[in-house]
Length: 193
Image 1 (cartoon, rainbow, N blue to C red):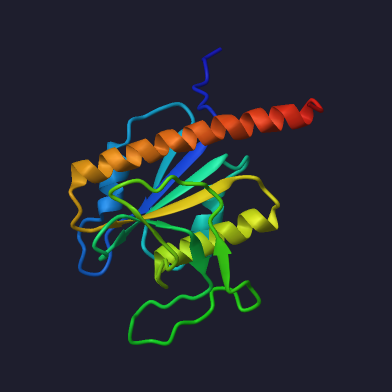
Image 2: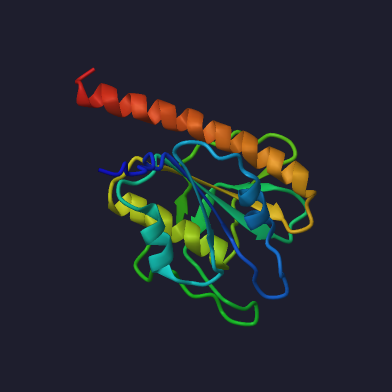
């Protein structure tokens, strides 16, 4: 009987985005490509489009313990997002619409990311597909009452690529440390400890 190549369950999901508008490259897909492979790490690059299903389906079953999203920005520095706002628009000339008509005005990210240089905190993830992905995934995690932790980082399109890769690699290590803690908590809860 042939041996089946079983992948370990996803513990940490890291996602980014592909090209869009005038950008033929997206720094987030380059950063994701550079991440060292490790058991339990799943890497995804989404097309840049407002499509709820692609983000919900990525959470999978069972859900990862930690989700880290990466988005490209035109900001002057790396920014760790602290919330997703219930608004979207494909074009700055249009009026922003709610992502979910009956949804909360904003949803907080749930992963405690240490903000170290060269990053800063942000309370405005914009109203394009990055923010949309955040809101949709956070809403789904809340709906399922899942303990998955979610964080998001914006990286400037012109940031030094090796520096961005080193920064995200450090954050991914934090994600795995958090996943270890969440797993221990779940085991303790199941055993009544």
